[in-house]
Image 1 (cartoon, one colour):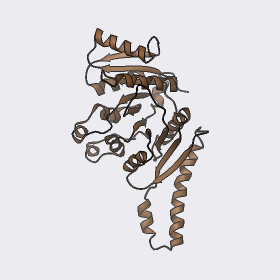
Image 2 (image 1 turned 180 degrees about the horizontal axis):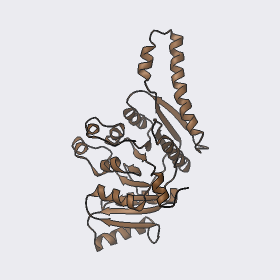
Image 3 (image 1 turned 60 degrees about the vertical axis):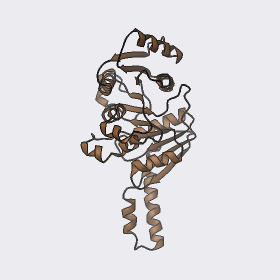
Image 4 (image 1 turned 45 degrees about the vertical axis):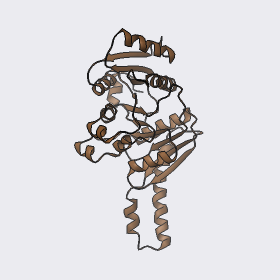
Amino acid sequence: MISSFRKIGVAIAFSPRIKAVLSEAARFKKMWNAELVLIHVGEHGDKEEQTLQSLLQETQLANTNEVKVYWQKGKPADQILATCKREGVDLLLAGALKKENLLKYYLGTIALKILRKADCSVLMLTDPSESPQRFRNIVVNAEDSPYVEDALATACFIGTKENAMWLHVVREIKMYGLTMSAAEQCSEEEYDDLRQSLVKEEVDKVEKILVRIPHEGLKINIKLVSGKSGFELSQFSQRKHADLLVIGASSRKFSLFDRVFPHDQEYIFADLPCNLLVVHPRKESDLRKEGIHD
């Protein structure tokens, strides 16, 4: 189970949003007391060096040995991911368009490739700010997955650190529609008992996980949904005016089939409701190699 990140990678480009991305990076560096690994893919010369140094001064990231800069050439997504892997990055921070158009979705974007291939956690910021604001409403997906507890622990940590107003834990009731359809011949009382039983069972599963996770003082709302989980997550996040959605990474590789019929995670990415954190703990074997396994 993870709740913090020791080393944060930051994908940077000399765009109008670079100062905002660096300002956000400084915020998360402080939150997790982490090292920063800045990664730029593209032109590199005196002009770029001077511009970046000036920006680092403005965002209070200069003159520290906890900030490293890597200048790379090649395909952006490949170079960013390769640098993250080589440097042992736990969390990759990047900007993303709030909505992807259809053409870009099928051709693929740098951000989408990163989400598909990253073997570390990824935080996509939809609207980075030069004056970062704390996360006030956080939504976390409690779907059954190998990383559900990691996602909940990370969301609780952030919520506590940020003094968030609410942490909304969303969980899908599996086979809810089918089960309730099969119970149509039951009496009204039996039908209601079955419905309440299904709800209680899913709430209990979430609460058993939360017992193991520190979250003192954090207001938690457990929301159960039925239907397509990616769609429901996105809609719920919009209704609650969430500024961060936390999900566990997929346990499988995406296939060509998923490009035509999007996986829930890619559905969310195609129409981001807010900032998105995909939690993907690095493998235990990788941590042991670096001598940082607790």
